[in-house]
Image: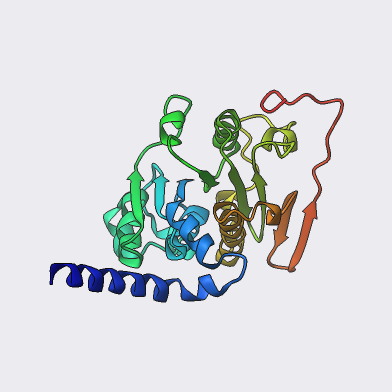
Length: 262
């Protein structure tokens, strides 16, 4: 009797799993094997603002098994225009974004393990934050942190996906081991503390944030499901306002020796 109950319970679990991800499993490049790979995947999302909150939402719904969210900020009223996981009560209470995202995502998909860390990524802790991680996604808003992520990921051969957005446009680039380039190769002339255009000085469209986060998430699904050949090669530039899309090929500069990936 005990064995039959165990089998019945297992069938129920399998049935719920199949139902939850049925539409994603039907997508041929993912299928059942890809979905199982997603379940085993361990991802770190650094920054849980516009991009990060959208990315974690998509990853949790897709069934990525473990998501580590790292962000030092609290929810503010100005965030609600584009950061989909938060609401007015979160802003009124000034709740930490990482913990708030975890509580919301637990309601979305209780099968996904969410780890929330309220901290600022720096040279002393980034190695610890990326331990046991298969993939890193960029939800930050500054190049100083991005260059730090780039160095740590290149050193440890961890794939990561750069993303940035301001006004109506944004950029995405998948940086994988042995791809022949890293973020420093692309933006070699930028100082580490370069700020440039951001939501605070040029504004930002929520639709642009969602679009860039969706591209980042799709690239992540390719990597996590083993569809490495499908990764978009080059720097993706999208402007949602005039609906323009460009993919810039990253060419090797024989006169430049990258200090990060050589």
